[in-house]
Image 1 (cartoon, rainbow, N blue to C red):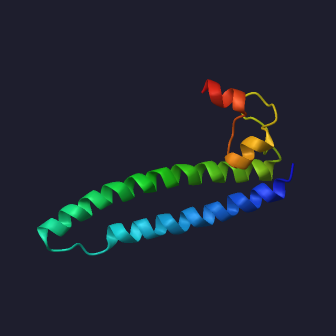
Image 2: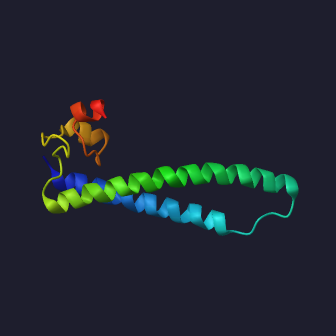
Length: 106
């Protein structure tokens, strides 16, 4: 398994998420429009941005955990059963902590 490949993918995705989360935070702190109709639209947009932010933060935590597993030498091993995680699964979800079997049971 090419762990360096996954580390590069994870670090790139981490940088993308950090940039996106920073832009979301900037949107939340930007001045609001004084027009009532525009403020209603902004509130709806804020809900969407908040959801995107939460999803991004969860993925960021998972990526940081995967990078810690790389540093600890356990990347690619299921954290539940200890069996190898298939490269096919890691190609789809590079931060996956569980093998396909254990993920199906969760």
